[in-house]
Image (cartoon, rainbow, N blue to C red; front, side, top):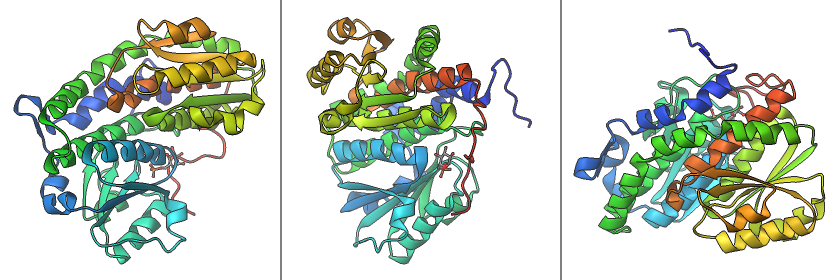
Length: 369
Ligand code: G6P
């Protein structure tokens, strides 16, 4: 079937807007909320391996590497298994330590990325149990792992990955909950609560997509700048990396993502009136710390674009621009906080007249080294 852009100017925009639906596709048949059940065949048929895992290494590239970092937070928090995240291109050229009961998870939208395939082969050679998270059915990685779970996000045409990212996070979240339940590292109450929260994601994504007008206004003010900084903490630190990656990929603006607490060790030197800083300042976790970071940026005349929860007061008072998003549990917040960052990258690239779907020098799937 031919894939059409429909009412959208670009595939990337269409794919951003598709996310409430793709999350449902990722969850279909896997989350039976009435029974409190998460069904993932690849985990169920290898239950003992996951229960006894001593450590998990996740390998990936690009956007998939960012979802791996979110997976690290989720698996450590909910399943209490130590996790290491590696760039596939680094992993394959080292002599990585894979001990017994070490699981390797490979994440790849295409399932064909050369470096990730090489990392998969190395992990298998070293005797690891390899679990794959892929989007493309029948791809090399999907065919060569010991077990796996598809993301079911549908074909992604825009070179800059969007719906794949959120579907990968969704699979990782299901994995972490399921393994956490097996290992009794989460209480039943928390498990049930998080399952319910998960069900609320598509609706909250839909709500968040309505802020596009606000983002267009902000984009008009900043599309001429040369640099952008993105800050987040905890599970939203990888989201800041992904937001910066989106912007640099399609608008060619230099952008860096940073853990907000590290700002004082370098990036703060860059801040002046020409530096917009996107701060993920959602409530919970590190809110007070983030407020401190925002004050530091303001004192240096940086322009603050804050992603805040509805009804926020403190961060909103300090920021130059606010983008309001619905409240959701910390563990699931990346699925919502990434939406404004995807839209911001898109709108800025569009205003700069760039080829959003086919950015220069990049390929959708990098099958050569
Ligand atoms: C390329 C694409 C990125 C993607 C990365 C990894 O660089 O442009 O969007 O994140 O490859 O691809 P994979 O298919 O392995 O997830």
